[in-house]
Image (spheres, rainbow over the protein chains, first blue to last red):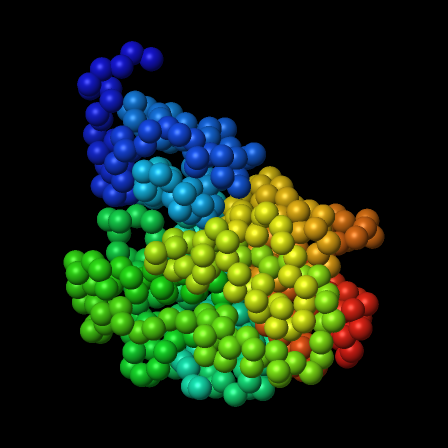
Length: 132
Length: 291
């Protein structure tokens, strides 16, 4: 990866900041977010690695990560972050970047009927908020 | 004590037992809940995009409706509690957003209705001491694990019903019903929430960790105040149930409350639960509760 001022400070990164309200450069990579994250088993990148990519302007790579769809917005990371960063806002801004042009990451027809029968309505409302 | 009541979407559908056990218990405790005349789903998750105010509209409408009713607003579901409290916070602190949202819903609302969780009423208004005196059917030391999850506790400065890392309101509640609260390290961990709807059953593993941790410390029952936590922890044990192995029932704290107050099976509505809770209560010698 060849880094330059142009690579690091991209227009995409500024857009993410407008959506999330967070400055990714405030992170000093201590890894506390990843250490306490309940969902890391299903992630391809750890939360602090997503932030590192964004710090280096690698927005595309972050957008293609499984991690942004696996974050459950439980706020354990932000409650513990020594830099006071709202990491779930950053994850949401990445999802928004994918979804706002009209893409969806969850199709109602793909939800198994057996699951629909038993899962609480709250999960459906939340999931469609996060994934469409 | 009279409060406005916001049931939310799930308590009138898949979590009926949460609603009915709470309403019946409150009647016994002398707390009146008057359901809001106008309410809609809160959105189930607080929006984390700061440049979009639209998801605040629905909870703001409910809050404005509570303001008109002129009473404090009570809710049972952790998600509703979280979303309503955080929306209140934004409408109090962010004047731009307040102006936008109020213009859209055509109401003047300043984020000033007090939002309470039933646990706060039990702790701060009734008091766990007085509650203990009203117990007619004791659990006689039944080991129960309190599961808080995320939404009751985080973010601590906007929502926090208790200390975010070492909460004890549910444990104190359990003690007042003569249950033995079980200490275990996963009580504030996330169950995986709405990720349950993604393919691959991604929430089973984190949920199983929570259940196994509680089980290893001797818990016979887990209590929660969130329908999605209830589902995820319950669903993670589906295979155990199918194989006839030991599983830990996951119930709403109000279902334990109703049993302790001597209320009958009809208000508990355990039928949607995957791990059947009835047998545990029979084993504990609490009468009148079927599987």
